Length: 115
View 1 (cartoon, rainbow, N blue to C red):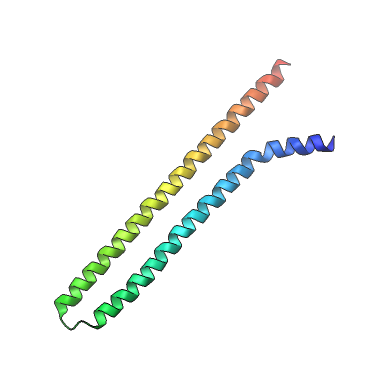
View 2 (cartoon, rainbow, N blue to C red):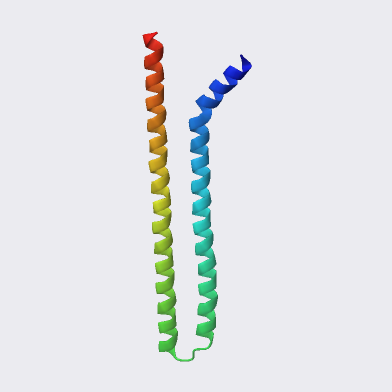
């Protein structure tokens, strides 16, 4: 009897554990993207400082700064698009999970009421 209750509990909690797993994987992917962005920004910033420190001409400094800002904008945009894609995929999977749970519950309730 205890085993049967345990199995019913596992079955009932499966959607929640699946959702928690999805959330954990999504957060891990987003953290990796943010870490990558931070690393790139630090690297590019150090490179920029090195390049600017050797320039004496104002136009050369302006060109270096323009290239640096364009690189940063591109990397941030790329990270934002990637993060949005990760979140959209997770949202779609969560929706499919809830739809499956809803259909399962509906069929279970229908079967129970027919008895």
